[in-house]
Length: 321
Image (tube, rainbow, N blue to C red):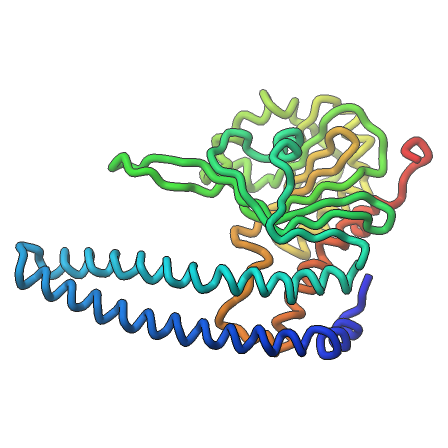
């Protein structure tokens, strides 16, 4: 794996000249957004005054209407300006960091894990209305075939006023890699806290026994403090989830403190790490000429690539070679 000290040299020697140009664009966008915000604010105030003076709107109703209208307009303008910047940022920062870490990998900023792969894993909710993602990375890491991307899976609901709303079922990292042991069944590891949750996973997790096999108990107290295991073959689950592997999952969770889902299906390990945000999107308010900003994305990608080493996926058994 690449070293942080080497990244600093790479940042100043290779990335910095291009980032200076992108930084100028970022500052111009911020100026445009601030100007737009000021104009929209004045427009909203004018609309509110007009509504209270010429219509039957109360002050509260007028402020609510003009505020909602102004907010929607500002969100549109912000999204319009930030979209182009995000694309250039990924070309100048994310792609170059990935190349620095491992130049053999393929990166597509508009790509994501195939929906068929997501469905085959059966790791996360299968009933959804919108499936999208970004930042697909594919290739070999320490001799292991891997692919991962940012994913956002949503369902459409109606509120008490029959208004349609989008609700997130999963947002975060979805990682797929060849597993180092041969197996035929399906074994799933879910965060134990999620099974008792009343959130979006609550109802889905209540049906795990029907869709993911039976509850399997393992002899690892610390592991069972954080996770629950389901599968269709208890003997095989004990084989693929060795004591060492379970300890690695515990260590990984305690380090990152993110809801972690793992599925061992079809000779592969599927891993989902919940973030509830877009992982590789830039922050418009932060300068690209500050190394600490770039360092954050490097450490995130290092964590993802490090999954192969953390779970020792490169240590194949003879039966898998």
